[in-house]
Image 1: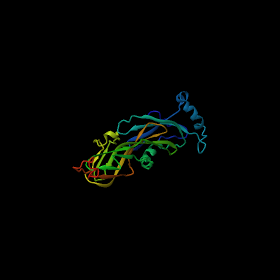
Image 2: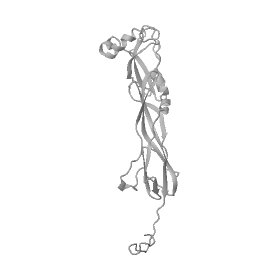
Image 3: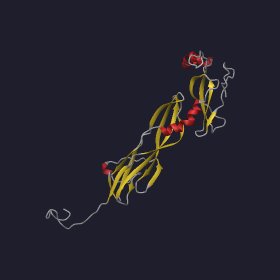
Image 4: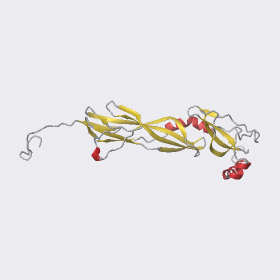
Length: 261
């Protein structure tokens, strides 16, 4: 890889790239803030004053400035893209922090307090047997900021699919359809997420929202998180009634006390 200098003071030895097999992303570094960089980038001037003096080093020894790069391991040869930097490292072999974060980011994603979608129904909380009952979900994209290995990490959870359990044994999904409420004049129309109940009774509608995750390190590029977050919503109670129609011969104007009046 271009940009490596094995003669840097302190026996600086580049570590081999580490690959995370799940997200197929590989990380590596290049030496930063050389003479040319220092003249161009203000960040180098700010960093090198403390890095070269060892002011922030645990043992007072000078550090080495590096840029982080990443590549997709499915391509050969890899195409390296700038990720972040410059940062100062004080070890003879810098830890591949980005790869360490990538290895544990899926666990952190599953621990994120993702807010479940809310469920709505029309009609509700009562509906009729044999009629369309429209249901919908309201879910939002959510972000979570945390610190991992001293780096600022932002996790983004985006709702992408929904699994509906209508409470009568009917399950639909995963589907990208989250539905939407209807205007009052259109209640009873068929929608992508509506359902017809064939039996009366008390039941609950359940929903699982499937969130895809991505993350950034130090405001770098968005990177995918393996797996999904499957978040269950609080059940929505629903009562299914039957409608009964009867014909009566009485004229309610002439006989207000008649059957059906």
